[in-house]
Image (cartoon, rainbow, N blue to C red; front, side):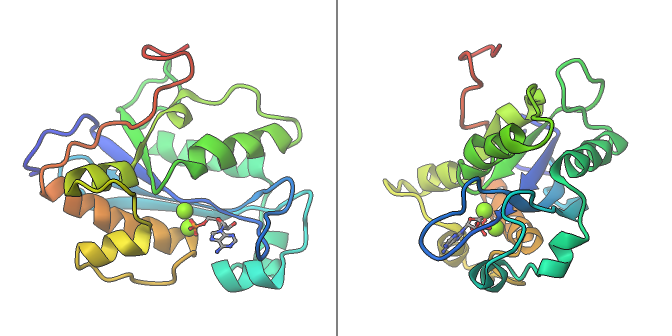
Length: 216
Ligand code: AMP
Ligand code: MG
Ligand code: MG
């Protein structure tokens, strides 16, 4: 039982990995790993996980830098589905667990948790724009999220946010698995989330949906 009643029944930690190179990102940058971890908004235990690699369409060859950073191999992305199929699989996974992604869907309320705003502010939108056919209507669930860096900074009274490894260090939690492997990043972020929830932090969303409060 959590010590504060959280605003959502469930949370889904999400951490994309994308095509990259030393210094500058390829254009367009494309998602190559779509991992997420489902957390109870009460106990913050991991209830389930979703993971798929994603085949890029524009920069089909991963750079050696990218494989070294993320651990993702050329073979893994070559054999993976394209983004629209992976997004459908992810949504089907959520629905299979009783979570709805569109406001008209039946299902329990949940919010995504990310480490920073890049995943859903930038990368997800770029990916939706460049895939074929483009995804014009972004499901509502992807339009508001909990940036755990902001809650961490607020709870420690810090002016500057820290990255995942900095937050783990400060909380005396071990970084397990491989940093920049998407699913391992999700599990490590989940540990930070559980720890903050245990300290009484209320995990409210940290961005305004487009169109301001109430959304469009
Ligand atoms: P992360 O969630 O921190 O593993 O990063 C997400 C994505 O950002 C990675 O898959 C890369 O595309 C990019 N990225 C992260 N760190 C770096 C880096 N040091 N240099 C270049 N790109 C990076
Ligand atoms: Mg990340
Ligand atoms: Mg990552």
